[in-house]
Amino acid sequence: MKTTIKEAKNYLNQEVTIGGWLHNKRSSGKIAFLQLRDGTGFMQGVVVKAEVSEDTFQLAKNITQESSLFVTGEITEDTRSDLGYEMQVKSIEVIDEAHDYPITPKNHGTEFLMDHRHLWLRSKKQHAVMKIRNEIIRATYEFFNDNGFTKIDPPILTASAPEGTSELFHTKYFDEDAFLSQSGQLYMEAAAMAHGKVFSFGPTFRAEKSKTRRHLIEFWMIEPEMAFYNHADSLEVQEQYVTHLVQSVLKNCKIELKTLERDTEKLAKVATPFPRITYDDAVTFLKEEGFDDIEWGEDFGAPHETAIANHYDLPVFITDYPTKIKPFYMQPNPDNEDTVLCADLIAPEGYGEIIGGSERINDLALMEQRINEHELDAESYSYYLDLRKYGSVPHSGFGLGLERAVAWISGVEHVRETSPFPRLLNRLYP
Ligand code: 4AD
Ligand code: MG
Image (cartoon, rainbow, N blue to C red; front, side, top):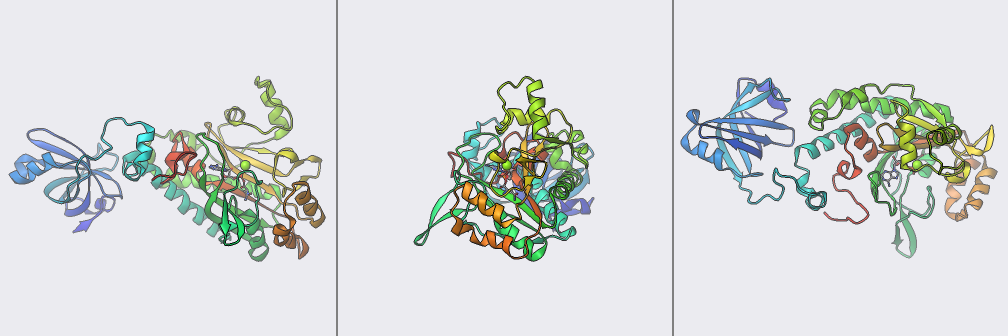
């Protein structure tokens, strides 16, 4: 019977064949322990000299790292491993022998590993991170489908810039200028006027010259947009969504979280409602904490966000930022025209902002004024203004950065390990 490492649990005390690769091995004169991987998981294969042919035992001892093989043997219980079972190998068929695999069990530097990202993906920790990323994607579709959202795909090649013009990738669109999308939001607003509650999930691009543990040049964003939702309604969706992501990973990625040595007690605390602090109170708090450098009206940097996050066990919403440091489309706060109805969701443990969201301006005249103030090309926003001309309604939305969410939930330090092939400031290869 041909099966996989993951499915082998259904074949206890039966003989099966699994196609995989040799991840690692240990052997003595009488026994060889093969660490096998097949994409679905990692499993130990035990080869006992007395129980196999001499050829098979010699093969087991000499087989090289990352050679591909079919192994056949009985699946037996093994309570010491995370998996819970192993294979008593009877025979081995080598498919392709690998020589001098570059990533050996010794320690390698990050640049070397990033140069070999196409192979590094095979390692146990990287495999675990991608499985968690996949679970977060699965749980995202589940959450929005179960809550009445329709998935709509905004374009990647665009003529307008939602988040400011300084970080755009330019390209030619035949004779016209075009940009790679930095956010699908403006199109999602149009979609919300057609479908009510919508979400997108796609690649976004920022030509940001940032070289931090939180910045990628290309990242994937989930952008829900909801007609008739005010800012407070949107915050509730955000905290429910993020809680669903964390609970799904805790439930469905136990082995991966263990592989990554993630402190799951911290994740288990995540539950609604999340704490909220206004920008004003955050500035006061930071000054009390000894941050003399922060003045009202300035954006927070990573150390500020981390200081605020460390004050809570849960992700925290920082709300009502000053108008002048936020994009043009945000609805003014009715109590204070200098601030807008927005929030950034800051993850615990120093992972920074994972969500940016706001209520959108729905008044045509105010939107026109903002487009002028921000010196945006009114013509390319004409479709966006139409949304305020024909049955404008209050609406809100947000964007969650997938890689930052994966970094936080997996507990990996740097977002570069949460993208299969990260695009970084100095990296377009592999
Ligand atoms: O805060 P941002 O810029 O918000 C928007 O783009 C809105 N248009 C979203 C919306 O309301 N529909 O980006 C949203 C999120 C951030 O909170 C962060 O998680 C992630 O996208 N993000 C990045 N992730 C990795 N690398 C970067 N350079 C990122 N820039 C933003
Ligand atoms: Mg933001």
